[in-house]
Image (tube, rainbow, N blue to C red; front, side, top):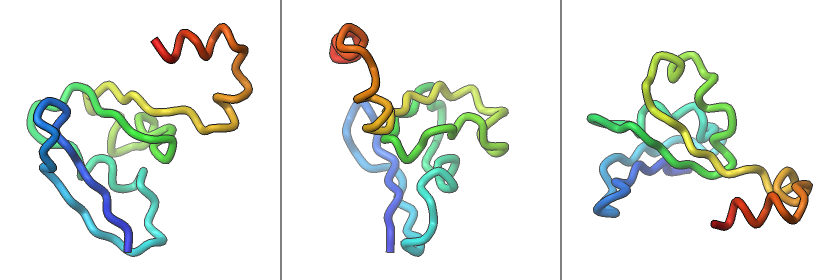
Length: 85
């Protein structure tokens, strides 16, 4: 099994939990983790291209998603410093 968890950024409380088979991708469940007046969503690298998915295209949510480790390592040192600030 795999769990997909939606957490409130301000309080840190879990507001949504979706359990699926382990073969289900995180990105397919992203829309189910949003609730209410969410304007910004954060995700790990598994959520790359989430804003391009049909279910999320009409959403006003701004997705902030981590880079895959290989892409991050390929950045010049000056760029990595900007990401840490």
